[in-house]
Image (cartoon, rainbow, N blue to C red; front, side):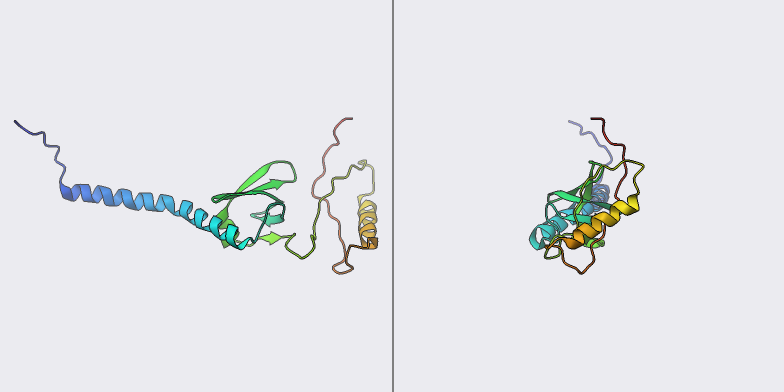
Length: 152
């Protein structure tokens, strides 16, 4: 009985397995990094569901935290999926981490002909007069988006 020889030696198989191991290791590096970062996020709780955050140039509300990634709901209704490693390795502004929530969003409909500066001044002066709003820092208002109002 004659065996079929493919010309594969143990030495060449060792090189192939080594190359595959290195490639798989580099491929799994980001997955493992995000997994470990997810465990850190869940243990330390620097962000929680409902927090308003700025990360990677986006501003939104934390909608879901999983072991691999975190979903941020943006003002336009879309969701940005952020790898958990970004919460560990980059700067994150968490607007709700103060003892009292410091930022909230209120959608308002005003006519396009309105004086926006006057409207914002009315909002800040109204906030300043509320008993549950602290005097420092001074309340501010900002416009996050402008869109056409839906038809009634």
